[in-house]
Length: 383
Ligand SMILES: [Fe+2]
Ligand SMILES: [Zn+2]
Image 1 (cartoon, rainbow, N blue to C red):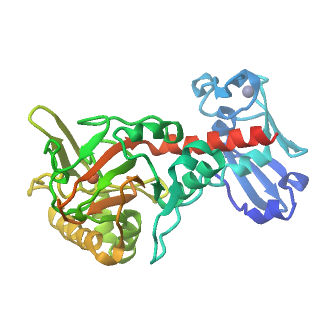
Image 2 (image 1 turned 180 degrees about the horizontal axis):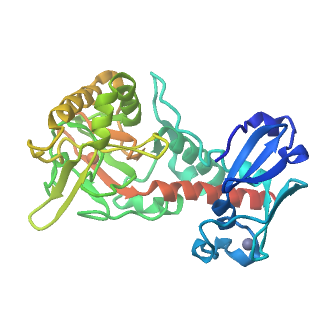
Image 3 (image 1 turned 180 degrees about the vertical axis):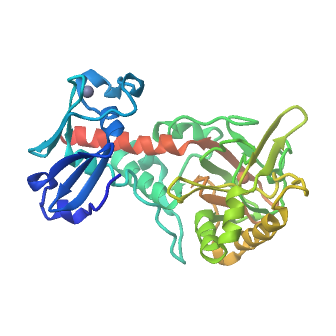
């Protein structure tokens, strides 16, 4: 929709409105400046997005106009530009005024791009008490979390249920099977390999849900065992490396449906989903990987051979020590991961001393919203 516009136009102060013209043509209103086509705005888009009070719920700014109120071949009678505004008159007399800068702003990304891990990457450490009590400090921590997908909160209480205290900062806990707060220790109920001293390959939890939890908090209450270092892996970087080197593998991992199941005697969650998901612009938004929850694929399924070659490649990269960040999660530390991006793993341990971890889940949309709230509160405090 936005054609030929670059940041320079506004950065140099050349407001497209100064010498711009509006031309109604072929179902669109074209905005031209010095013969350069800046915008091509479909008539229905223009009518649908009318910002006037008649077309909006004024108190909430939600749209109240719905497109079925007009004909598909709707065309404005007049389109004029003046003082940075595009004014349109519709056949029924309705008038729409758009601020052109608002239209140009639509092409700018709403969120910052994720930041790639450097070879020596280590998640940032943030103090638990400051995180909960100091809004500016929490902003820095959450920004870092949203950029790289992992941080560690240090000096947390070593008591059960501590993760409940994170809700004011991360949003409400997302409950999934089997508990609200999950205990990971060898004397917990064994419904998962995590409840043994065995090593855990990189994975995200609850791949058996259609929409697995997008944030996981892993709280080490006590770590007196030998071994059992924690590992995190940037699965998005791995997916990008596959896309760069084997686009056929990448496409298979984006398309081939894979079953996952988490269950006990009386419960089951089951989802069939591809391992990679992209947004409509092709950016990776989710990697689903759980060797332990993955179920047997129907071998008659079309594309299974290519999928298995791609899956072999993916497993090799995910388990490659060069792609992992390894550290010991100490008693009183909480590892936070953006779980659709960052896989977590654990080395095997010898239960010479107790190792007790608690898990809880949150949602990344709520964490991003918490950042908006903190920034808003900060601005209010300054005002
Ligand atoms: Fe896990
Ligand atoms: Zn209107």
